[in-house]
Figure 1: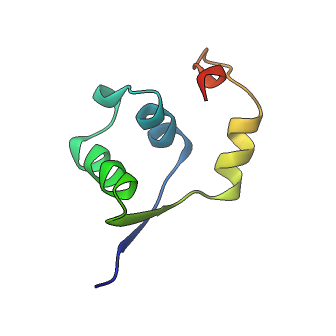
Figure 2: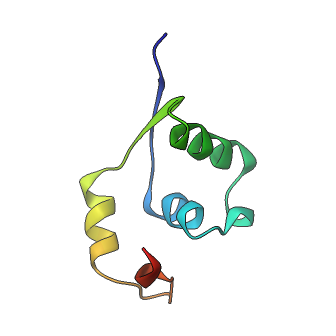
Length: 65
């Protein structure tokens, strides 16, 4: 059985990691939860990592990571 593969953008990733689940659709949250459990794979593009490295202009709690 092969895992389903997805690609994320910055905002859904940040909202999931910071527990702001109401800001993402249920289907997206379920996909992230399935990835945590190993049932799906989510690729994080380099540009997303770069955006995260720039810091938090919107006051998102990156210091908790």
